[in-house]
Image (tube, rainbow, N blue to C red; front, side):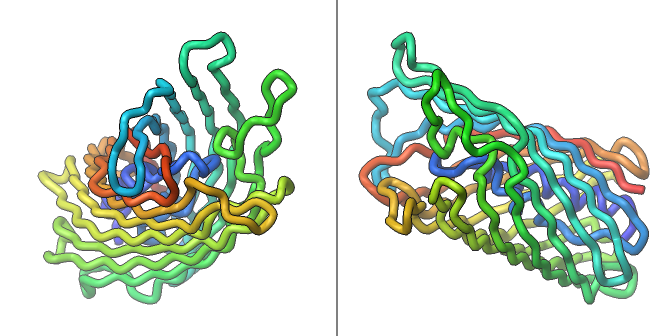
Length: 307
């Protein structure tokens, strides 16, 4: 795959980040979702910088939105750095690190505002790609295994009181990760592509005996390149998580199912770089427990560079 095609596929990175903190039981960034693109070629590098603003102000009971009388407002701003390197013709490695800023306001009292910021989780993912999309093949297959690493702080406090798990910069726990990707080009130039991706996170407890629920994601989407400068991507993503646990006991009002539509557009600056913008549009929610907050809006801005 040419450098140009790598940049086109990189537009998936921006839209995939919109899955951050879909329920407020999640801390930091579920980094695996940002890896939903194919691997780079041997001895090649790919760098991506992404900023996301994510708001979680919708209150749900099961599949129904309900009125929030607490006037709660929740926002996370994230900065993500990703680097990919091609080890061989079939193997590559992806590494990622995040910096997050959480803010939450409940009501209008003097003690209603809380915040925390710092380095979040990191991720390392090794990818095996036995089939690449090129002039001789319209198919691409790739699988990967890796781990999420708790790099940042997970015991932040405010006024001497521990902040809740969803306000911590890092989850504080390790996770085992599995990932798979299949892509197909409808034309030899790869201007029109269809892709399917999935991933699974097996999450462990942190030092406070808290574990985010295990998570599965499945996405199907298509990309279209127009006049060599512009690329458009649309994806439908399904996400499901188990309930979070503390000391092995399930925590109420965590876990559920989400379906989102994720559009993205990219502009190619030159042969090596491009910028992209992505959004997330909620389609369906079925959340566990009586009441649970979830995404109201999310948007990303990214810059990618390949060499």
